[in-house]
Length: 202
Image (cartoon, rainbow, N blue to C red; front, side):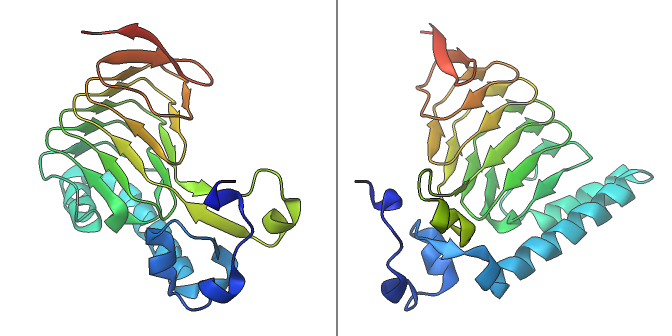
């Protein structure tokens, strides 16, 4: 059985701080982690402030966004409005990448978007997991986060969803509306729900 499908070792987890749990992909209860809650709530407020400023002053909103996203390249172009970026310090964006409106990133897992990417509107990147078969663990609020990695020169159509623990290689095209649940190799075109490789670009 995968470590992630085992019941949480509550005694061992009690000895770790929340940021180590997240980094190690361990179970935690969001409802009992005030430090994580504070980050998410603050980020939600900042996103709304940036969106409000963007209605009348795009230059100022862009400066605010650069402060908000310390690990995004200065040459990355991210359109407003944003939907949510819950953990801005966990988002890494490469140079010359373009991200269209309504980007949504949940939650505490690391998200890496490479250089020279085109990310279409309404894309959603989700790092949290819950137990797929143990309803009691879900009721208790247990979750863990898995990273998302997107390579260089990728193009996502609109409304693409990427799930936790997914790595997408370089020069990958993901068709609009696709749901990516597993790794996609470099130099391919993938589409569908779940997304599957439909073409190789050698």
